[in-house]
Length: 394
Image (cartoon, rainbow, N blue to C red; front, side, top):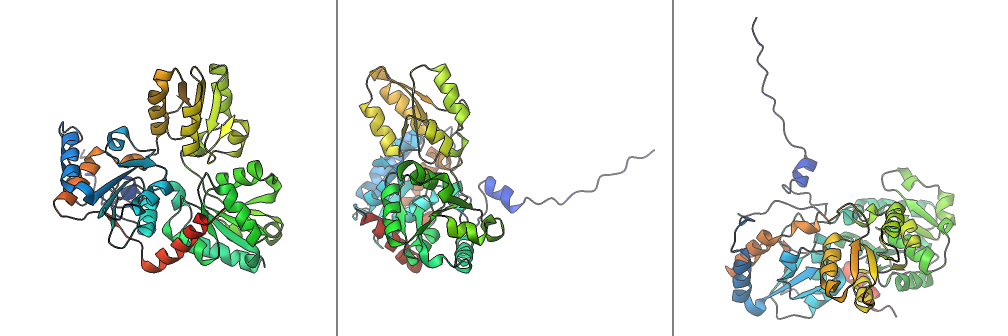
C-alpha cells in the first residue's frame, strides 16, 4: 500500500484577512496599511527613553495629540488629551508645529488635516488604526441613499447631519448638501439647527446617537425614526416610510458602545447597590433609557470630577478611559467600574502603541516624514464647510 502525496495548496490570504492582520491597504476603508518600516520590539526596555529623546529633539516642531481612549503608555507623551474634535482644534491652534502626531484613529487625523494649515503635516503612527463606525458609511453608499431619497420625493426636505466619527468623504457630502457636523456633546444643537433648515434629517453614521438625541433630548418618538440599511435595496424602507419619518438613521454603530446591553445595567445594579450608571450616547437606546446619566466623554470626566467621595459609578464607554479614571479617582474613594463584565477595548484605537509612536517620532527626528494623512483639496473644502457650520451653532 502506498500513501498518496497531498498536493501543495496555493492558498492566498483574502483582502479581509490581510486587513485584519494590519497588512495591505483598502483606500476606501478606515483601515489602513502595514507599517513601512521596522518597528522596535515591544520588549525593548528603552522605548520610553527613546520616545522622550526623539520628542525632545523635535522640540516645538512636533505636537502630540492623545485621544482619551489611547493606552496609558501612549498618553504619557501627549501634549494635550481630549476627544477627537477638541484635539483637531488644538492642533489648528499650534501653527508653529510642523508635525501633528495624532494618537487616535484615521478620521480624527483627517479632521486635523482639514483644520490645520497647509504647512502642517498630520501623522498617524499606525495607518491601520481606523474606526469601524466610520467604515459603516462609504461615499458611494451615501450617494446611493441620496438617490433613494430623491426618488421618494423628499431629498429637498432632508438635511444631513454627520457625526464627527465619519470619514472626510462623508463630511464633504454633508457640507455639499447643506448639512452640518456634530459631536456627542452638541448633537441636540445640531439637530435643532437642521430642523430649522428642513423637515427631515439624515443622521450619519451612528444610529444610536441620532436616535438617543432625537427621542431623549428632543422629545420625538421612536416612531419618528427609521433605519436606513445600506446593504438592502432602497435601504430596506418603502418610499412612504421615508416620507413619514423625521429622522432617517444610518445603520451604523460603535463596536465598543454597541456591546453594552440592558443586562449589563441590571447586573451592575444588582452587584453594586447604590451605583450610578453613566453611559455614552453611542450606547443602545434601551441602555441610555436605563442609565442615570448620559453624556459625551468630556461629560463623563467632568461628572466624575464633581462626584462626591464614596460614590459608586459604572461607566459605559471605552475601557482604557474607564481604567484611567478609576485609578485617578481611587484616592478620593470613588469606586469606578466598567459597565460590562466583558473586557472591551477599542481594538483599532489600541493599534497605536509605544513601538509605533517611537518609530514615528524617531523617523520624524531623522527628517523622514511617515504615515502622513492628507485630504484632497475638494473634499477638504466641503468638509470644512460642514465643520464651520457646526462651529457657528449657537
